Image (cartoon, one colour):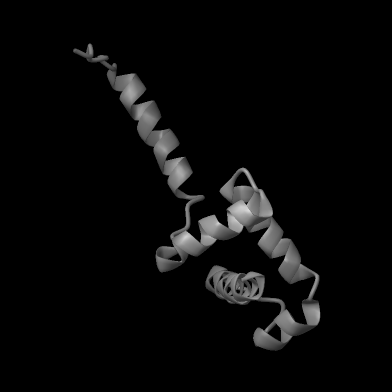
Length: 97
């Protein structure tokens, strides 16, 4: 039987603080999760951060097309970035198979 580890109040507070910090960097890819993992395996990336960086870098190399999608190139929202990432994943996924 596992022994239970008793945490102090300070340890619990520290854990909650760290958990809130982790939550600020999380995104939900929803139904695209399986495709996200497939692309991650195909490209050989070890972490989600590596795949996200790859996708964002791939988008930045094609400034003309992304500028055409965005109404104001000086203001890009996270929802726009995610939208473009999903479009990229969708087309990349179907061109690989």
